[in-house]
Image (cartoon, rainbow, N blue to C red; front, side, top):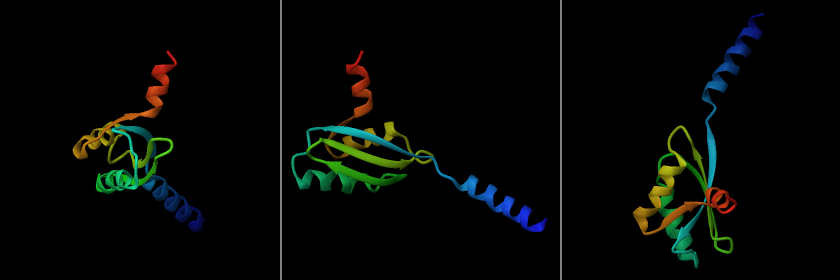
Length: 100
């Protein structure tokens, strides 16, 4: 009986520790055209609170950011691009607007 209650306690602690990890995909203006553009974006975004992973793709012109939603939001991350000379817009929202 004691092992079951200990397991239940550990399980509830693990659930409480679970983070709300989300992903946002953005495109930038000006567009990325070289490795230096990628380095500039990654180098600046990595210091933003809650950012877990940054993947850039020059051929697709996209930046995929995985972040902890308890620490930041997609809107905040998109605004961060302005600090280093880019304007970012979420790809998903663009697709929704174009389909209307």
